[in-house]
Length: 132
Image 1 (cartoon, rainbow, N blue to C red):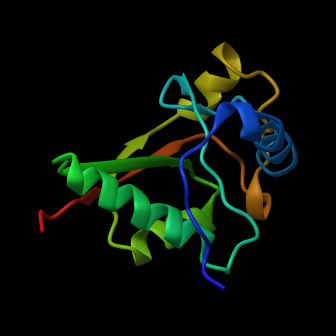
Image 2 (tube, rainbow, N blue to C red):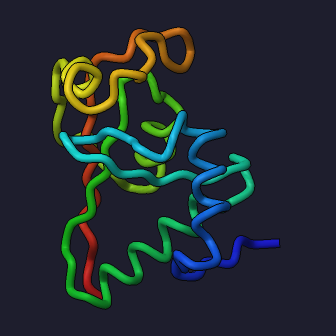
């Protein structure tokens, strides 16, 4: 069954979202590009991330947005592959950005990330949104 995507509702979704972020992303505060944000989908491989991305692209297109970018860390090989398979291109490397976030925003960021890779850098991937 395909994922059903709907807008976030703070009143009904806050508790669930907080639990999800704690369990899967190490907390509700995710440091990216000197800001605290989050995006996640579980379980993987069931189309939820693809459905979220399709909804985002559709909404962006409707608003006239021409470019979408995402940021991940150098250890997140699965996310890098996911976005590239969906048309995103590597567009920026921020060397030492995770080290900086660990010092200034989120000291609890682990040093060793996925696949036993040391987390140090951020990668930006960009998708050009074509008008319909």
